[in-house]
Image (tube, rainbow, N blue to C red):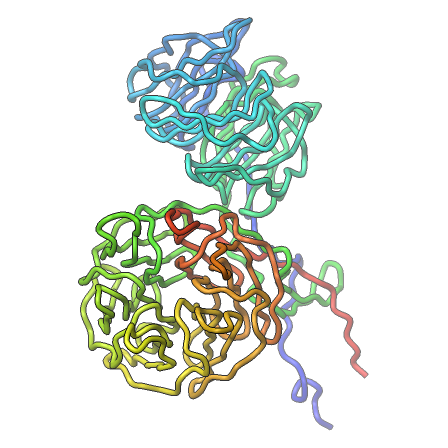
Length: 610
């Protein structure tokens, strides 16, 4: 008799608990050194091993400033103005404290900390207390506050300027992130769990906290944040971790309390809570708690992973919830551009060259690397150009074609440090599509200028380019994704901008078209069966935020980009993609980076073994 497993089957893991898709593992709060002065409603900023607590309320407002070194607090020079309910931003060597209250008046005063003493800075435009704050001394952010306001202001190192308001005015809210990628959550008026993301221009509502509360603490980044404590009422020690799309409850504070520091303190995996008000004390607290956790390495490996839960005696499988994907703000690129080469993943991306029109010089050779939160300058391309394409990884990338002018056949390789010229394409062109790796790349279609669009496709083997079978429809400004022999080309400037073709290693086959025709589109995907296609320009010239997901047979509209744009950079895969820079209109280039993430889930499996 033939064994069932030889016909259909595989080894199934036995697990005591379901695998987790996101959040923090093994999270615990532990006691740190007590503050010298018990108080509430202080300004707070810094990290777990180097933090500042300034001002606050004992029985009256105080000017005390203390520094934490990861073990104990030490007294430093006081604020110039004693106050309560203020917020902070920055580090222990370059910090800010702003706003607050000296009853009955609310304050506009800002003070800058240089590591030893406080000096006066530029005043806020709106007097307020119990506000949110984050960022740095030279790029601070203030938002919300009492009297109930949605006002948002940015600090440039000397003065504050008004920006777009929060969607919901509130006070007693918490914060995380930096000036160009911030998170505001919780607050009062009325009590709320609302969470909003700031991209340096405007606020967008995202998933709420599980527990609505005010006067809570917060820290981390706009994609990996921590919310703790607060008044729900009653006082609570509830802690929640943010993964860029949703909040998950983790280990509670040992001391339930509210009136925690105003400002972003610590990281999601290394948080810090200090001071506040707790009935358990009772009254003002001087307790410090340190949050320690390991970031979960997603144990949901892929769609269709099967395992047996020994606790619930249930056979289960994992799946990706594509309809639940969402875009969130990442770090802004330093040099905004369009029509540039890109490569890599969501946490290790590369952007090189491009067109900065209407800036001058128009074509650049600037190259930048992304680490999942911020962009940093790297060594430049050998030749400045726009309208080029790229592929590969951050440490083994390829940039090819473009316009210098004239149209270019140049190809350059990046080794993680520098660019070097390689053998040219056979056909010079710009506005090409690209996909693959540094040693197996495809340069697809494009514009030769004279006579115009070409259907020509060339393959690079790490040394030279060879012509292979053409695409069925010549096009420019298309998007490629996947690797040889499993690639896809989407949209583009053709008669029909909805066209999609699949590459099988030998030839191109037309397949199901995207729902909305466009060119200058972005695409993320590791093969031609799972892709997202986003943004672009839809005739007669409208920039769109549309995002469509491809499952190998059909396109489905999913969550839009936060910013409508086209002719941008893209990287990553269908479940963790990246959209970078690009045009938002014919005369404006965005510096925004957006990250696409699809949550995973588990489902029970019913098995018929007859």
